[in-house]
Length: 211
Ligand SMILES: Nc1ncnc2c1ncn2[C@@H]1O[C@H](COP(=O)(O)OP(=O)(O)OP(=O)(O)O)[C@@H](O)[C@H]1O
Ligand SMILES: [Mg+2]
Image (spheres, rainbow, N blue to C red):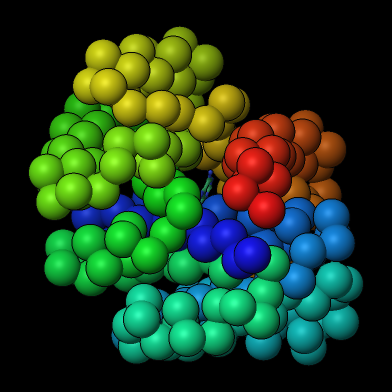
C-alpha cells in the first residue's frame, strides 16, 4: 500500500518544498521507499535540491521527479511506500486534484492573520469540495516565538482543523542547510534539527497508520 502525503498552499513560500524534503529524508532513513513528486514545474525547487544533494554525495539520496499533474504522479505511486507531493502555490484546481488523491494533506502556514486567514480559507474550500476534514492538517512555519505559535495554534483549532505538534522557527540555519543540499533535519545545529525532527516525526507516525 502506498501512502500519499501532499504539501499544498495558496500562498507561496510557506514551506511546502522545505517540508517535502524533510519528510522525504526522514522517511527514507526509516526504511521506506520514497519518491518526492515535484508538481512545481515552473520552479522545480525540490528537483534542484535533489541534484544538489546528489552532487554533494549526501546520504540517503531522496529521489525527486517532476510531474505535470497529480494524476501523472499517481501513476507511478504504487512502486513506493510513500509518495510526497510537493504542490505549486496558487492553483486552486490543481490543489483539489492533489487533495483528492492524497491520504494526508499538509498545509504549512505562517502565524500572522494575513497568513492564517487564506490558509483556513484554502482548507474550507477543500472541505466544501468534498475532501474529508480528517485528511487535512496544518504545519506551523516561519515562527518567531512560542507565544506566536500558540496563538496561531488556537486560531487554527478554533477554525476546526488539526495541527502537527511542534513548529519550525524562522532561522537562517534552515535556509543554509537547504542551500547545500541538506534537509532541515540535517542542519549544523542540533536544536534546529530537533525542532524539525519533532514536527516531521509526528507526520511520519501518522503515515504509519496508513501502511
Ligand atoms: N523555518 C524557516 N526558516 C528560515 N527559512 C525558511 C524556513 N522555512 C522555509 N524557509 C525558506 O523559505 C523559502 C520558501 O520555502 P519553500 O521553498 O519551502 O516554500 P514553498 O511553500 O515550497 O514555496 P513555493 O510556494 O514558492 O513553492 C526558502 O528559501 C526556504 O529555504
Ligand atoms: Mg515549493
